[in-house]
Image (spheres, rainbow, N blue to C red):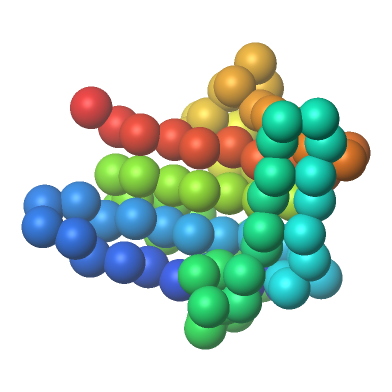
Length: 98
């Protein structure tokens, strides 16, 4: 399973934008929630799901989309199931480390 991701360095923060590769370019909406999985934000790099742990570990902020990406983050202790938003059946998890 491939993960599409990009890392942004902003001041003292490292933002990881990652998603299940097959979700790139798709838009999801439900009630007041809207999620646009833009290739310009989430695209650029690819890795196998099992090789993304280092990127999770280095990120101070993460914006994650897709079952595989979100499950991997939770499995590795980088997020919590109760913080996941579901939009049209697609999980979205935002993480900020303080």
